[in-house]
Image: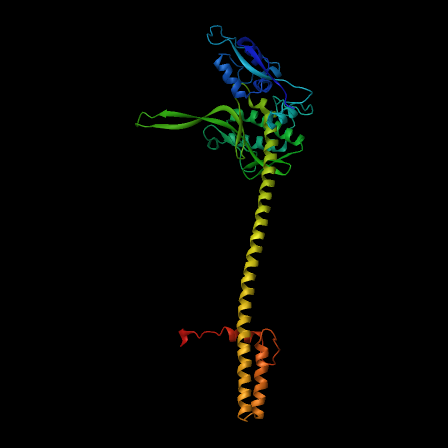
Length: 386
């Protein structure tokens, strides 16, 4: 049964109060709209949004800046949104699988998504990554475009030195959440892999770079360089790729439930795709077997028909042989020349006709089936050696 949606008229002031009362993701779910769609509405109504890290600061009791609603707005003062209701405890069937799983994960009281300010009892992979990043930071040549990148065999992290601690805390929390859910994280060469129910998903944590133009006064052209932005990104390297980035409403630490949800769904998709490929492979194999069976039947049919023609020709020749032998015998009797030698020849010839006849196929002391084939298909002399 579908859950009803109620058209609700919300004033600009009410929407402002809402976006400052809870994270954009939670608000978007209530009104069955995407985060980006809700942000566009706020931009249209000139409603300021919480700054980066706002909700995390509130979690830790830190001071936040609240931007007041501008009073000089001259556009429409309200907007209509479809507020999603629940009925009989059943959610709207139109809600995506992602949001359903996200709600289950978010409401799981056994999971804590809070990223601590300091590393505490880090996972072995995190300890190795921390040591590796620290050693790389000491070597200036190892820092490229202001970014330190972990070595082979270490968690895939690529951030500016000042963001290493933050990146490690985020990854440590993600690894612990995954392991709490019964999953695992492994490193293979230069690739970090999440293993969920046997399915492997490549991941990495990186800092986004910004392209800048550097003017060169000596020459008529400009140079291009890249600098760290401080924006961290968690990337799932499985087609289609998915990135979770710091943004104006949510920093990466606040998106861990989404990351966990997405990884779970990607695992399900990989498994589903494998099963579908296996089904297609089995169907292809069955089709090939059917085609091969038809081809084999066709080949057998041709061979059997060729054999039928050969046997027909052999039978005709056997009949001709017997008629010929009978004619020889008749002439010998007529001429009174049926000697012992001729009688012996007639007996021998009739035995050969019986051997050659495909109906009688009597055995012969000296000749066999191969000899029949040679008689029917005599080998042609090789003209090259003539």
